[in-house]
Figure (cartoon, protein in one colour):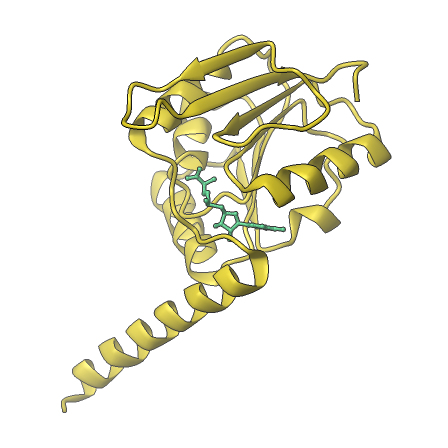
Length: 180
Ligand SMILES: C[S@@+](CC[C@H](N)C(=O)[O-])C[C@H]1O[C@@H](n2cnc3c(N)ncnc32)[C@H](O)[C@@H]1O
């Protein structure tokens, strides 16, 4: 085996191993939102003012990077614990020179979300419950939450988009101001 082949093999094993590890510990893989879901989420951010947008569990940056490009004057923040997706997003940030984008390798449940005016996520039911509890506990100025596929339990969305896909997957928009 050549040196290059050994490096490729090691990188592949590390990437695979780290993804399996983060999936097992977080309860969700870094699977990106579909193109249709991404577009729907992006569209829902259009009338949400000019404040910071946070993505909780930003994966490989498939949504975070377009957000930063769409809103060069807004602060865009991503939190991602899985190391390879976080690293790729960091590389994309540098490649595209996205100065308005910050991406942290950090558990969003331990992050200060009080500055977010819009939160986006694509998680799982348990993750939504934890976000709901965190937003209830911390207060802050979050006005909107946009969730791909998974709903809050104790809030009603102000808008639900049903995607034109096999499962008619929902994308939810919640208005949180004075409600959480
Ligand atoms: C299904 S993926 C969604 C990726 C991206 N948001 C998208 O829509 O394409 C969920 C991501 O959330 C991340 N994640 C889950 N819980 C997390 C936590 N507590 N802190 C940081 N990242 C988390 C996972 O590692 C995974 O990459």
